[in-house]
Length: 336
Image 1 (cartoon, rainbow, N blue to C red):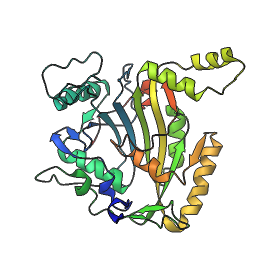
Image 2 (image 1 turned 135 degrees about the vertical axis):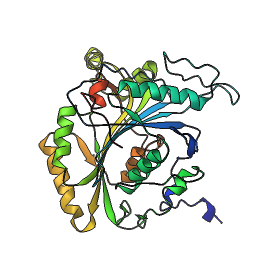
Image 3 (image 1 turned 45 degrees about the vertical axis):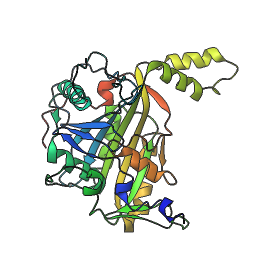
Image 4 (image 1 turned 90 degrees about the vertical axis):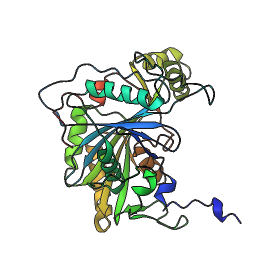
């Protein structure tokens, strides 16, 4: 009787929020949120101007680095989940300084996306099949090229229909294991935002492996962020509130729910050996991390663009230097 309510983790499309292309640069997801993508290159001699990312609640950003054969790219995903006071009311969580007239939500979002792309040296807004190819690459953990369908809707099903995704008996020994294309997926959460120099050092140690590095930020307004930080630090120095206030005062800048995640695709025969190697590297550079087990699927879902509801148990953080956060010390023109 309850079969219709059972979750089937092997059906990727039933978990993905991806909807369809409604503009060449904009995807509307099944939950009504909008997302767009900016491709940029590697560090170069030119430097980016100072960037301030002060988005209101309901906005999110994924910085996604791919390191596969034929795909060594960096892509930024911007997401907007419009917040309305009623079904017939316009969204209230607009970006400061970017006015919305009578245009539709997707046109306003496109304007914000284009404005952000101009702040990124060499920034290139992805369109049509470029977007579809990027999304499928994130799923498959390999370089993909997708032909534009006649009707670019139901992207959740279209992009995952041929995906080799396997989960295991939820009551068995391998209940937390899952594979893509026959490769074991290892998910590692890094508990701090690494500066670009240290991040480059870590990623170079994994250059012989297929991986994605995803840095996600779900933006929060200042009052919510302050409240969440105080809640998180409530047990710090319980008898010395002044010390706790001092530690909080050292955090500067805006922020939100920020997570750094490494996703590896490992050959099953050597997966345990690579797990040890991952631990050794991160311990050597003294980075706080967790090689996920019980939460591995949730963390993986959260790295996929637009999946802001997944992996929600993240500690809030402030970010002082958004330029370093985005790896924008300098980038050259992107190649698609």
